[in-house]
Image (cartoon, rainbow, N blue to C red; front, side, top):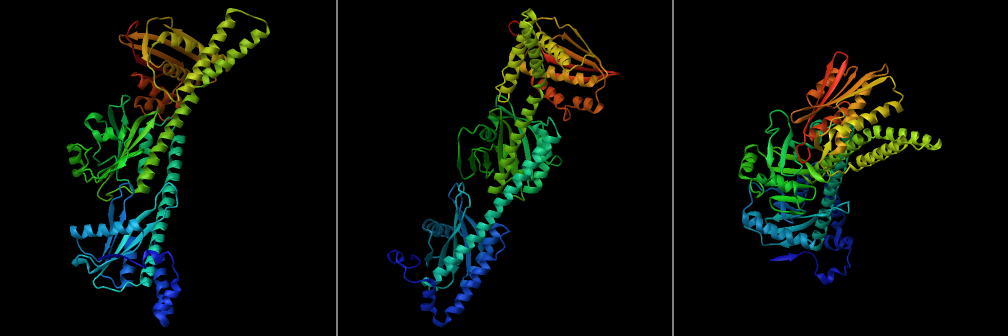
Length: 585
């Protein structure tokens, strides 16, 4: 027979007696002593160390309850946020597993306690746990509007049938409230630590990109993840880049680098790996299920062995390597998922806590922001030449207008100003691009950029640099690429050549030629390029010199290559791009 504790509902709405009155009436002369004992118990509960695990806090509290009430044992169950399922949090003085019949009974009583938010007393307890159960609601309050309170039940088991008068129930409710306060302090501490970790991530990410100019996502991941492992106990993680068509994922980096199971460089077709496809193409799916959790910011595989998203081979892989749960965090740039962060929970860390997930998804967002800032810096870096051209030709047009001149040069200069203004606009728009490939007349673009570079040198007063060109009057040499991309490449190479010549002056030459299906552009200059830059260009690790980093990335995206060579006092950059053989090519 189960009964709700306390007076009937009708009398509960009209409480006449205070706790002091109850103490006086029930205990008489012993009221003061009992009151002191109650306060002592209340103080013990409040003194539980909150800087320990949730389970340890609840366990310590259960011990105090059992000792104070002379009970035989206790268990705690909490309602899981999202799924609404009950999770056993701890058990005190119960050795071994609890039979399924008893588990079902526990859940039934706990759900009733949580739903009503009131204590429940029952004498219908299976024999192995005692003859009576006292269920108390536990609430862990949230301090943020965006989070719900966590609700659970503390079940206290007795091997006898004590008399639960209203005083005992009230004291027990007060004690349960105290436990909720301690757990809430633990929750606040968690929030504080999550906030500290977020601050650390922001500081580290942006300190890395301020030092390492032109850093790639793979580089940033490698720079950050080892330090991240120290603050959140990451055991294994990897970085995938997603192809532009969204059909393949390339494993670019993994941690730890040595002794791990990551197959760096391996390509995965999303059609063959539904778990990757689900993480990248979420299609608005959301919900917390038994084996998976779909969130707008991540996908959590809670049970790899039972997840319907994992292939048999992936399930076997997870079992072999002791992977207990997997967290997938997509990273979006240019309005599409460009990268995927994957974190594995191994033997020592079986699950990802809410705080862990919050920190790791925040980490993914900060990496995205860092790349966007890097991209903005790249664009601003490339504003230099067209801005100089607009200003320089603008001044010339002004002088001609003041003198009343109206010649072909006047119109030619206006045309250059318009073209460079449009180019500045296109670069600004390319912050959010949908990359548009188009047949580009390479000869015309090189001629145009060579001319703009010549004017830029004049505007800067660099008259001691001799310019020469060969083969720029060619025709019919086309490539398939965004025109703005090849223009940025050429401007950066001209700028670097100018810097390498230095104040003493020298020569800068440009040429175009064709080698079968490849268009070849050479830009050479007197002066020397430091060996460490030449070495990094050869190994594709350009992290110093933003201009060369931009060149390397843009050329790679166009399917070409750029090579730098030093020949005595002359440096030569050779740019090779695949020719376009389409209609009119």
